[in-house]
Image (cartoon, rainbow, N blue to C red):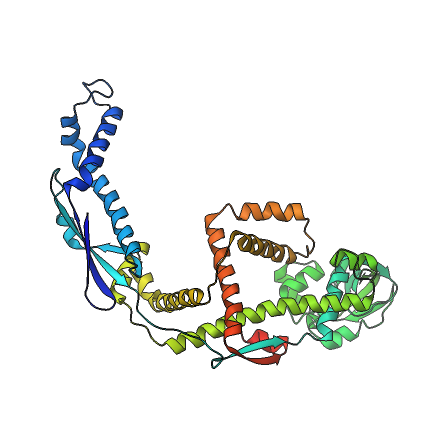
Length: 443
């Protein structure tokens, strides 16, 4: 097969492929013989249909299939061997619709190519990029410690009310002919919308009676009043007066003990022996998570920095729109998302060059480790910090069975390694910020 490429301009080209009889005849004849073996046709025994009849009825479609296979293999081999940096796939021209496929003849096919723009990118210590270190405060550590303790906590009945306790009792409407009353009503005064109503419950004890106004406490919220008074939602706002609440039970959540069992649960291995060591390890854990977030923010910032440094690239926009339309079949979607597609494509091309320059490579072990990290993070969201190795391995095996998942993991590995390499290349303008300030950067 004779293949040639003619450059129209820097980003557009036309590829011409001439398929000769010598290219396809042997494969075509074999395909005809294979069809003969499988062919069932009235009036003929299986496998005995004459070749001439097969060619007459199915020859064009069989020839088209074999020529198409040749084109697919030939075009992409040529592109690969000649290192043509093509975007998308070759687009058949309208001329191809007029090719008349006849056995023994030559066929000429033309394809439009979208060529990636040429550009240079380099980073040195002269390039300065922000890097944000998040300040891990003592309060953040205490909040995390409290969260660990709450997982081992329990509810206990107590004699007097403190903020955040849950109270149960009998509620009775006052100063009406037919009062609403309900038993086993549960309330959390901490979540009242009105501070004055909250204060009425400060320090109350078992069997005390408190007079308060639910409508004011819940800011006339129909759903909450309906649930509290055990009346229909439509009737809830008809009871805006005061009520008595006789306390029959006060329940308090008591965090789990701060002991060796907690230390070993969060950090297996028995290395943590004291409260101070535990808090220090918790601080390391928080700092490590923020470091990953900081690295991710750095990757976003350096992407913006490098993209602006490279500048606007020239793309064969009309061809790219044709390629996107061929893939999606939705012109409105193509038009609406085209600018974003160009933005992503620009970064993809820049990233490819940076990966090559910095010799970033990803192997199977990297992908497996990334799968483990992703799995641990998923379980951590549900409070499961220490996943047995066997269970973790099984989860990772299932993840690696899916091609799309593996591709995503490879991309994450590349970005992590590229980010680490670029941190060494440029000068970091380090800034220490609070967690609140850091989170606002993603808003």
